[in-house]
Image (cartoon, rainbow, N blue to C red; front, side):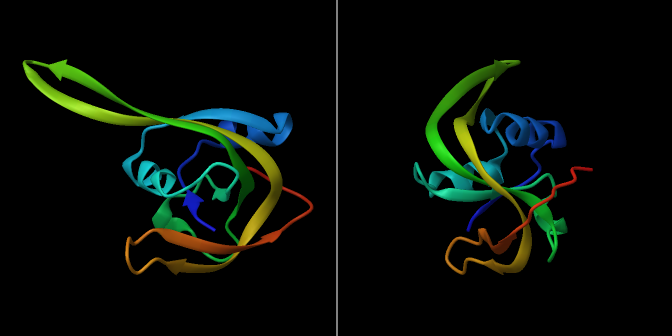
Length: 123
């Protein structure tokens, strides 16, 4: 299962309490993960950074219900740059902990095996 990282604890709490949450994702590593993710595919979401994920890292499993990607061009002092942003709606499946971690050889994306848990504490 692929991983979205560095999601704020407040956002995770909202997803857990409401069961459905639309997020605006701008982080390049999370955008790369979402580009290979399809609607109705489960994904592991955590507030930890990619480098800090270990066995027992807590997060949630959610299904991608809706996703749209768009590019914004912004100018600053006559220089232009483009930002890719994803608007993604997630539906909560369960809270979980990381059981095992692997990294995709072809695209270096983080992949985790998870265990569902019956409790959750967001720090």
